[in-house]
Each structure stands twice: as C-alpha cells, then as structure tokens.
Image 1 (tube, one colour):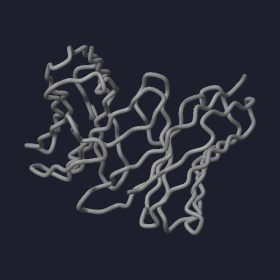
Image 2 (image 1 turned 135 degrees about the vertical axis):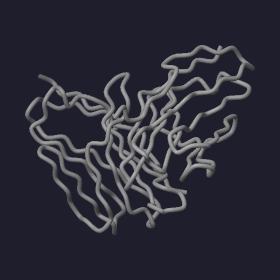
Image 3 (image 1 turned 60 degrees about the horizontal axis):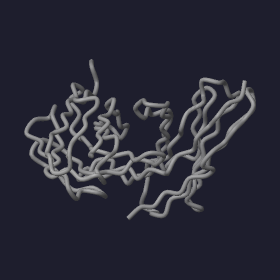
Length: 115
Length: 110
C-alpha cells in the first residue's frame, strides 16, 4: 500500500517568513495530493490540492509543488501570519471510482509562527 | 448546508461496552469515510463506502463495523470497546476528490 512520509515534524518561523513542508510517497500510481490544516481541537480542513497532471498550484499565500519522478510534493506558505499556526497534513491517493479517494496521510507538521 | 455532522462529541466507555458513532452528510456525496486520529498522529482509514449498500475495509478495520443504508448516513459501530480504541474519530465525505470532515468524536475507553 501507499506510504507517505512528512518532514519536518515541527517548524517554527518568524512572522512574515516563508515555511516549507515536504512529503514523499511510495506508490507511483497515486495521482491526487491534498494538504489539510488542523487547528487544535478542530477538524482537518482542505487548504489546497494538486493532481498528478499539474506541477504547481497556487492560491494566494499558499502553493504546492509536485515532482512525480522523485515522488515528492511540498507545501509553501509565504508571508506567514500567526493564524497560520496549526498542524499541517499531507496526503496521497489514487483516485478510483471503485474506492473513491482513500487517502493515506503523513504524520503531520506542527507549524508555529512567532509574532 | 450543515455539511458533515457527527454525534456524540465526547464519550467515555468502559472496556467491553459497545456504541455507535453517528455520521450524516447533506451534500449528496457518494463517498464516505471513517478515520481515527491518535494523539500527535495523522489520520488512519478505518472503513469507507462508495455508495449506499457498499462498504469496504480501510487500513485499521479490526474492532469496528459499518453500514450504509442511505446516501446520507454512515454509522460506525464498536462492539467490544478496548483501551486501544481511545482516539478521535472523524467522518468525512467526498465528491470529485475533496474530502470534507465532520467535527469529530472524542472517545475514551477505560
């Protein structure tokens, strides 16, 4: 099955700096890569996703890049703000009608943005 | 739309007791999922369903059962609660890949 590794496990940045979180996956058949943000005691919320036919996707201050050859993808947050502090999870799946989007999650990165 | 709702929010069970975690979505999504999240960890898939009447095991199904009689509801059943099932349980639904999560149920088995 799929295995997703995520680094670093904790990340502390100064407000206004950039943050980068990296994930690698093992199954070359995976074709969908979402990122979730989870604040303390809350549900995971989808912040951005990318499919394997695209190399990069941006949404305001967040961007995701995908390298299919190396089987890794990264989350980039620019101009970080204190409200970006949360745990971020990457995930990977092979989209199939027979199984929906069975996501395999990384173990999470706790991001702290220092004011 | 309420999205994905779960009940109860919190529950304490004794070893050997059983309970059902409820999950309902009002987005008419075909796909629904149950995950568990242990402290400081990512989410692990317990069971999933691609439509009413169709369910299948995920990564960690032991000790759990599910049913899907309607598009809206996807309950998770614990038959003989064990301390290892202490966790936060999230239900999710999806359409066109993006998964939307419910608020979670925090379960403690003592």
